[in-house]
Image 1: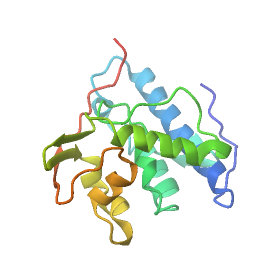
Image 2: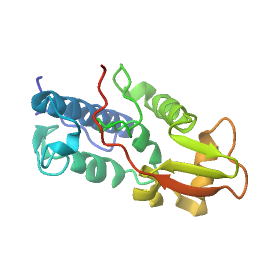
Image 3: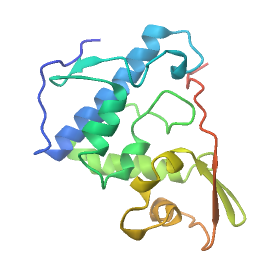
Length: 181
């Protein structure tokens, strides 16, 4: 896989920048899985997310740096990143078969967020109790900006709204490799 080492994107064109780094993250996860296959989980590879460095986009960076420094830190109000950055584990929302493009990025972020939050395996509702992914626990501040609750965030994208007073708990994240068998 030829990595685009010399491409330079800036936050001045936010959609181009975000699409580039989302695509880079997802492709680098695939690259890391393929290079280390067979494996049961990306976590089987020491430093998979935080030590392995990639020269891309004019930077020498890790997967965690792409997610946390290049995307979340620069665009703190964009919680939908969590539904398009695919870590390779079953706990992640599924990867799409197309690239994220600047001109369609908002619609793609919206679609993937709605797909995840309407998936009964991802949002597990039982009467007035809901179990949600640990993603919501780990990154709670991303989802609870401007005084909104986790339920408020979920209901913004969920077709069947969670009832008022829904009790929230978290189910363990599944890091098992998401592979076609």
